[in-house]
Image (tube, rainbow, N blue to C red):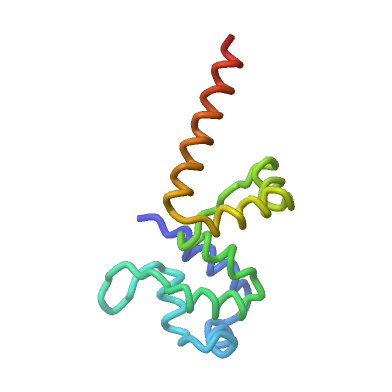
Amino acid sequence: MENDLGRFLEGLRGKLSLRDAANKSGLSHTYIRDLELGINRKTKAPIRPSADTLKQLAQAYDYPVNELLKKAGYIEDVQVNKEMTEERFDPEVRSLARDIKNLQSSDKELLKGLIKSMQQKGKKALDE
């Protein structure tokens, strides 16, 4: 059974003792060790830390909490392409998004149809 997260957590702890890690994080040293092993040693059941637990460990180990949440599978590691980033911060696009947000749902549906029609028209033009 793979335990990449547990090995990663153990690596983050480094030379810090389990008891010191417990004092810094507010978690018990036995729970931290169980997380590193990937199992609850009493029940032998797999163990998955909560997002709050990961936040405590991130603070204790001075590691970005978002990166730890990605490692644990709580959030996706999405590579945002340049075009999406530019659109997201383009003032004109943001202004349009605000305008659309204030439309009634029937008008939003009409706008979606218009956009789809325009996209198909543009695609046809490219094919010719």
